[in-house]
Every structure is written in C-alpha cells, then in structure tokens.
Image (cartoon, rainbow, N blue to C red; front, side, top):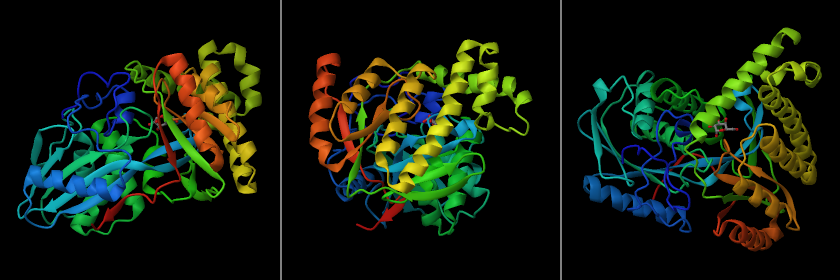
Length: 434
Ligand code: GLA
C-alpha cells in the first residue's frame, strides 16, 4: 500500500487512514483506493476488530511470540474551523473510529512495517532509519520512530501491522490518529514511559519535519489529550488546554460523510493558509502586539477591509468572527446552553461557505437537511472542507429522524446514501488486552 497517485473516488466505501493532513496539502497522496481487505466492518465492536487485526498480523508475520494490540482514535472538530494555524482556539473531540496497531518485539534491531491496506512490508534498520521521507504511508510511523529515538533508547526491533476504520480523506484526521498511535505503541513496547505531551510532540515532529507537512497543532493534541464525554478546549496560541464536559445523556454528535473526496483540496488548503498569512501581514501594522491573525480585532479588519484583496479580506473575516464564535460557544457549553452552542456551529458553516469558501454543494445539502430536523441544535462541515464530513449536535432523541431525513435529502439531491456515525468521544490511544 504505497500512497496512490489518486485520492479515493467519490462514493467508495473504504476505510483506513486518509493521511488527511498531508494529502490536504499535496505532500503525499492518500493511500491507493484498493478495496481488498479494506472494509473492516465499521459496525463491529472495537474488541472484535482488534481480534481480527491480530489474526491479520499472524498471517503477515507469523503467530509466535506475544502480540500486543493498540488503538488510536480519529477526531472531529466542533468549533474553531481553520483557526489552529491562525493561533486561535479550537474545540475538537475524539471519535471511536481510528487506527489499529498490532505489535511484536524482535530479537534484533529491525523495524518491519506493514498495513492491512496493501501487501508490501517495509523493512528498516532501527539504528539507520532513513533521514528522508519515502513518499509513502510508512513515512508517518517512520517519522514518529525517528522523533522518539531522539529521546529514548530502542531496546529491540519491532514488527508492526497497521489498519483502521476511519473513512479516507473525510476530515477525521487519520494522520494524527496513526502518528499519535504509533508514538503510543512504540512507547509502550519499549517501556520508555513517555508523558502524553512527548508523544504528541513526536507526532507533530514526524508530520512537520519528516513528512514535511506544516500542519496545525489541533489534530495530534485532540488525539493525544482525549477525554471521553468531553470536548477539548485548546488555545493554539499558547497551547493551553482544558476538558469541557458535554452532557451525553441529552445530546449526541453525529458525523455524516458526503463521500466527496477532492484532489483540488490539496492546493486549496495551502492557498487558505497563505491568504491568512497575507491578511495578517497587511493588518498587523494596525494592531499593536498582534502575533497571529487571531489577535486582529474585528474593528481593525472592518476599517481596512476594502483595502485588502477581496478574497484575503473574506478569509480574515472568517477567522476573526470564528474566534468570537468559538469563545461564545465555550461560554454556552459551560453554561449548559447547547442551543447557543449549536447556533455557533451553524453560523460557522455559513462563514466557511461564504467567506472561507471551503464548502461544496454536498456539504451544504447535508448541513441544510440536518438543520431541518427537530432536535438538531447545530451543524457544520468539519475538517478542512472541500468534501468529507459534516458534524451535527442534536438531542439524543432525534438520532433516528436525523438519519431518515438526511438520507432522504441526499438521495434526492445526490442519489447517494451518506454514511453516518454517532459519537460520544473516545478515551484516546490505548493498549487493549484481548
Ligand atoms: C485540517 C487540518 C487541521 C485544521 C483543519 C481546519 O483538518 O489538518 O490542522 O487546520 O483542517 O480546521
């Protein structure tokens, strides 16, 4: 399973890591859309999926010795869209779909890496890991191994088999899932007892310095600092974080996949990052002490709006208004006012569609259909946009209506049945003893 040249095509029902962050920036193609062995039964319990994963490991690497099993979740972002690389606050939550890792220690210093999504096995020498990315999925675990080896001794080599049940390119951060998950598995296998923050940093170093993706910090933080039943409040300017409870006795978070995967998204994401940088550079002379676009007051943007390139001005308007909406959502969550929280999500979608221009017709159709459902509190696209998933906050009692009405609308407008999940947050990277 080398990274394929083409992203997955619309409508394919395949699972695995999407390597979203890299793919979104054009650094690496997502995995090829091989369908063999890809559908690991999204409805099965995690334990069952991991038992199957262990069987796949035995087929690939033989069944002698102790095989250990690890899971690392994906994430969905509820508020703070496109704010992480602008120094703003974000409110993500882990989901219970993610990356599976089966691992076994070796008596030598070899690292063998394979995946259920392809047939190749990459065999490397732990004491001489490549210092350049290979341009394949394996760069993620390899980059993490390199980052960890700067901090810890590797007492022995490992055989590792990766797999998973996150939809490809859908905005649920499979790249952070695999990177933080690899850091966790290596840490546990080698007994190095790293703090969660060190694993998150290794994941970030892998993506930024080895894979070569200038990703924001939201995704690895969301995965590495997961707390079930809570949203993470992460201020990307000073990296301070807090876990804010969401009352899952009353509400649910639904994620609905358009099945749209746009290759164009690669360049478009980079363009948004660049437009935000341009906006900051143009406005910073009028905002004393500002260090990122998040710091630009709305009054300063309003005063200079017409002097900016129109698209740059609109991108900046999304960012500064999204910062305000995200703070409002935080207060609403703390006050238990989920109607106000949901209204911020829906306003965020309008801003993402009109000002940030990262929505597509399929996302708008799902959001509009969701907002028609009694008991839906708010809805917006999640992840980078251009396709992928929407996220919906709704009353727990409204799940069936949501499923029926959104499915009907999507079938009517796009002749497809969208895939849908309900999430309550996940406990984060962990070993499962099965
Ligand atoms: C992608 C990136 C994240 C973040 C979101 C937009 O998912 O990987 O870092 O920028 O887009 O909020």
